[in-house]
Length: 493
Ligand SMILES: *[C@@H]1O[C@H](CO)[C@@H](O)[C@H](O)[C@H]1NC(C)=O
Ligand SMILES: *[C@@H]1O[C@H](CO)[C@@H](O)[C@H](O)[C@H]1NC(C)=O
Ligand SMILES: *[C@@H]1O[C@H](CO)[C@@H](O)[C@H](O)[C@H]1NC(C)=O
Image (cartoon, rainbow, N blue to C red; front, side):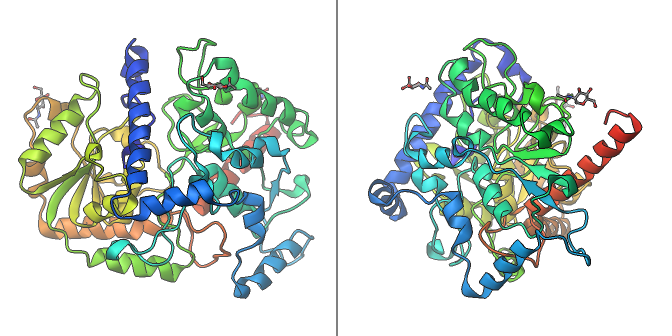
């Protein structure tokens, strides 16, 4: 599904500053979304039509607050209760340095957005997408390409809900802000932003401004100016960094508001070189394992997958001129007998199993920029044990420094887009020159990454592996500690 690409635009400043980008963005975003929804409804494999029925006749969607308290399998109930008691001071403190204070916010900042899921998108009802703590509709094993447990039709922009659900079960919550290592603000900024991209700037900024006003009045915020606060805003930076109040400019201005200056927002991609208030974290994939055993079983499966294609590309073309590298990639792939191209325009990539089938059958997966430099598809490819091929460093290397290995060559390939568009570099030739034992080692490195970049089922009381969210939390604790120290010694940090 190239909903992975639906934000619209070219991966860089170029498109954004040119006059035509908006049109391009709007039209791709529109058509991709319409197409995506359309093809999901058509549901080539039958799942889509079930979905459609579900979304029109199902009871009101589950709110994150409903879900957090239930669903715990009986063997986990005990643990849930003990988590609550952790909020009382304990001497032998396994939570030292990890306490989190979670704001109880008015529902207009979170649950009301989920409740209004039929209005989250101008074109379609997203109620089936926000269900299950933001993981969406559960999938079965899809004819053997997935597993019976842990797979969902997860939309790429649902991390606000997934994280909040997860935080409600966090084992070291405290009601005492003064002893917290960090303060979590559960504002669903991505859901809010997604509603109004095509409305006036005042509609886009209304809830962010309301949020800023509300937060700045909290004594917990005033105590530090937000230095120890964090939130999860699951979209890319350019959705939140509008500079001028003109409708032609993209996005809202959340990240430019004073209240955000010293907070940390976990987002999907940062393109500002000077930002100090964001940390990019992986896009969610379709996989949400509950236990380390679920992860290991999946790793074993993709390790043994038969990979009949040298490389593959799942995605469509983009408006001409702005995406010459895509056009060239598609041309090269279509011309090669060793490349599989799943064209989103033909519906081949509109459902998770379609994407995962192709990725599991390929050694290398091409990940050119979409509307912005990063793509959710990169993380789907990692899940499938398919070695990502990037065409610019900011598609991954400069973004996900917490989650991805320091040495890019150990798990991925970079072919600069300029080399492709210069028409002198053949992707097939480049990839087929990599020795088989090197390919195997890279694949193993990719498979090893799975637990670290996956988001575990936020409803489970998983304790036996560290997932993408755990990794991000550690970075937040670190940053807050440094900033507190900086404040104490007078250093801005
Ligand atoms: C946003 O635009 C849509 C479509 O024009 C309109 O129906 C809706 O009322 C607008 N919402 C706001 C808050 O302005
Ligand atoms: C953010 O921190 C800087 C440096 O510590 C400080 O000068 C500034 O006033 C803070 N901003 C807010 C909104 O508190
Ligand atoms: C391809 O051509 C471009 C422009 O002519 C040049 O800068 C680049 O080094 C070439 N790349 C290779 C691998 O030959």
